[in-house]
Every structure is written in C-alpha cells, then in structure tokens.
Length: 297
Image (cartoon, rainbow, N blue to C red; front, side, top):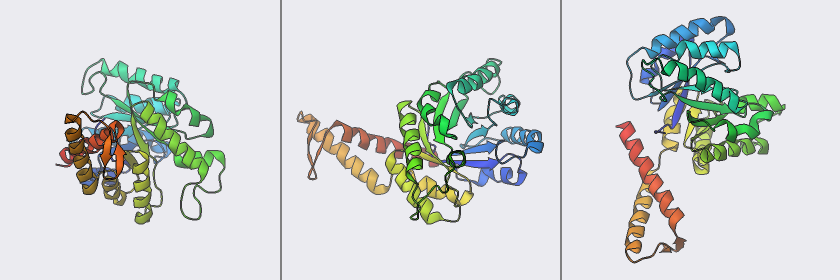
C-alpha cells in the first residue's frame, strides 16, 4: 500500500479530460466506466480508456472503475481492460465477498497469460455501503488478497435510504452517515487495507472540503476520492503530516530512544504519560512523511 492521498475520478468517455490527466497532481486516477458514462457509450469509453492506458506511464497510479461485476456490462468492462497496463480495478456496489471473488477469478485468468499484468499485481479498491443492506458487509468484502483499499458510496447510500439530506445546518454529516463512514474506516483498518473517504460533491466550497479532510485525517483515513481538479491539492495537503507533526514526532521518538536506554518504556513527556502506542503513532507519522517526500520528489 503506497502513498495514495488523492484518488481522482476521470470520465472514461471524455477525451479532453483524459488528455489532461498528466497535468494533475493526484496520487492516483480512476478512469470511470460506470456512472459518468451513458449506456450507449460504454464501448466507446472502453476504447478510450484502453488507448489512454497504452500511453507513457508516470508515477500516478492508474485504476479503472468498471460497472458492477454482477452485471454483464461490468464483466465486459473488466475483460476489455484487464490486460492493459494498469494498477488496479475499482469495484462499485460490492454487496458480498462473492462479487470480489468473481472479479479476482477473471483477473487471475488473464494474469496467468502473462503480459503487463504479472500475477497478483492488479489491485482492487472496493466501494461498499452503497445501499443500506451492504453496510454490515464492509469487513467481509475486504477479505481477499487483491483488496488494497476500501471506500464508501455516500451518494448512492443517501439515495438508497431515502434521507432528505446528508448534512445538518452546519454542514456536518447526519448521524447515519457518520456511522457508515466510521464503519468503513474500522473495516478497512481491520482488513489491513487503505481507508479512503468518500467524495465531497460541493466542488466550489474549498473551505468546507479542507475542514472535512482535516476531520477525516484525524479519524484515520489516509486518502479521499476527488471529482474536480481543484480538490486535489487540498486533499494532498490535508492527508500529509504537517511540518509541526513531523517535528513533534521526531522529538518524541528521540525521547523514547533516550528513555529506553534507561530501561523505561513509559515516562512523563511534556506533562503527559507516554508509552508504546505513542511511539508507534510517532513512527507512523515519520514513515508516512518520508514516503510522501519520496513520492513527490
């Protein structure tokens, strides 16, 4: 699981947007064959995506969102692009582990043929909780070696339960959406896959996006889906440790090294007791900062 702060959607049917992908600063892009493509243009979008994937690579991860794997269209999507030079597939509307196993079996059959996709290379990012009945399957659907990330479908979930709004008068998620968001985070972490927060659809409200990203990162999410290029830099900054966080983490690690030489794993540090979990968190911050610096170089 590499650095993947911003995961940006690009409509597979839009050649103009596809041509601008190299100009984006997103850590990963998702070329979309699902919601942004009308039924009559699915085949054209597949050809666009396959052509783009044949272009010269850079450090940006390349994913393709197919239609639901339980539909013929989804299987045709997967079969049309699985042999392309990509990093993974985004599976929408995942309702059970059987959906994941089906995608895995199709990918495995193609990988065994050789080509650009070596065995086990193609990852899966799952979009779960797109309906009320799938909320409680978030942990089980992640139980597959290909799964590398888990997110939740806020807009589809919103539509499925008949809510009048997603947010309160202060712009905060209503409790039911907070619950699903938390379930996604906990399920992803328990499965050792990346927890990815859902899209923020108010694309002109950069202040609110920054606030939401800050809260999301504080919760434990390590990336967020984006739907407009202007969101990418905000997301990248929000999911990167700040200079202050890195400085504080380095100082705490140094304090642990000094105290451990004296045989102490728990001690008073700046007025607070610290022990092993504090060291682990500080080390994680430093490792993430180092990985981001390397990725952005």
